[in-house]
Length: 313
Image (cartoon, rainbow, N blue to C red):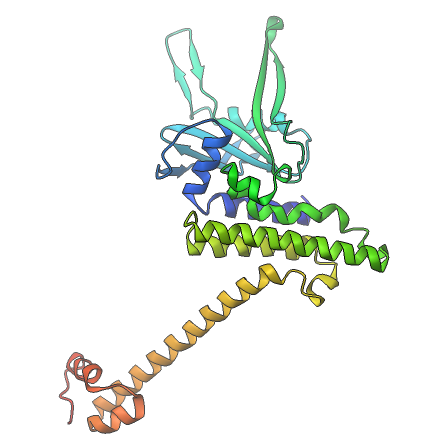
């Protein structure tokens, strides 16, 4: 697996486990379900074994209201259909039922593939024909979602906002030739890149404003987007030098700064409290403790009581 494939895989799993609400909206849209958005999502063990005891690991495997679903991330078409079928039948304990001495049935999980670089929305199914003994034939199909066939706004309109961070992949195919571009072509690339970041950020902002995602989900989506951007476009220094990705990064940096400031303030508060405790134990007068720590009597009296000491007034 290539480095980019690894980052796609990791971020896909992060995003699809981030919000049960967004995941259910995705399932309702792709599988034509109508699950309540507050339904419980129960993630199942993604690991199973093939005939040679090699581990097969599904990307996302979960259950909603008793129905099992499997969602896989993929860049391009390869042997995906064969692997999906292999994944589906590799857990005989799930969905298998013996009905009598001669019959059994196996209910396969509902499956979908998200092609992160796919752009043709018409190709919304994948098929494999199973030719069984005695020339019996079964055509098996799964749903296919082409992530880049939607704009950021269209993802939201189609209840697929869980795919928003992967919009940053949109310009991946223009990366390798960047160094050989003319200055004019480089400027065009950077302009398009800035617009892409702006569209993603504004769409996420609208989700937050409309309370369709929480503040934590919003920032995690931004972090996932920035992780993908950093990996995919890492060899184009002009992106950071000219700040064309600032629409994404400024929000992440502001939040990081706030978190660091809150951590520093908390540490300082704890240090002041420890210092006040030491002064109380040394029976320093309250006036002096107030002067050195900034704590007033409403804080110092309960603190002294907790320590089993009488505050010297």
